[in-house]
Length: 257
Ligand code: G3H
Picture 1 (cartoon, helix red, strand yellow):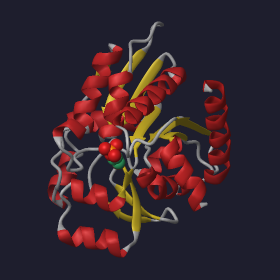
Picture 2 (cartoon, protein in one colour):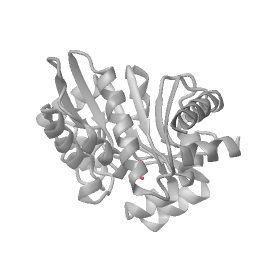
Picture 3 (cartoon, helix red, strand yellow):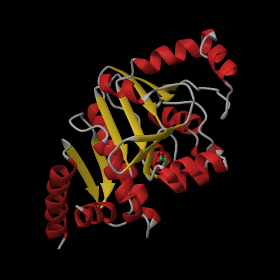
Picture 4 (cartoon, protein in one colour):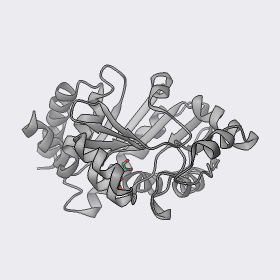
């Protein structure tokens, strides 16, 4: 019955909280590796959790990816007076336009009747370009806002899948695989113990900035992402992360424990 399914997922949420040592886990039924509709449901669950966390003023940094794009589709305007501003968490990571954070922030703003700012940064920048870019007044202003964000919503990817999808050069892919990276989040590649194996050099939120963010929501599912989720979450032990995932990933995480 439906009741039984609900309590089954709640049980799984409790188990996963203990395994991952995080405060809050939200699991939707199904496996997004097998069914696209499950990704939409994760999007819905994440959108409603975001709305619950909204306060009067919200500065929200988001990453790219198809899962965060699914979140955007499910956002709706807030009933109360809320100031909501969306930003890409980091500049160019090599994603296609549909998966880029820039595209998704515009969608989120449209759906919530909020505002957004883009971060125009080329994907691969030299040291010189990088240091002059961060001094550009418009970029500097955006970066300062990102540092003060009240919420971060990010996807998690399998390391090699993400490196290939972003057309990473052969040398870097080698580094990522030699370092046994299993997970990726906002341009950082992590091994199973949560150590950083590689970091895409771009501007915006850096890993250490997460410490000061009051609300961090990770949204990722599918059994194929279980190791990636464990790696990314491990890296921030003790810090508050809300994980929105699916049964496929959750069952696999329990199995791997
Ligand atoms: O950082 C990880 C990616 O954003 C995940 O992308 O949601 O399309 O699997 P995805």
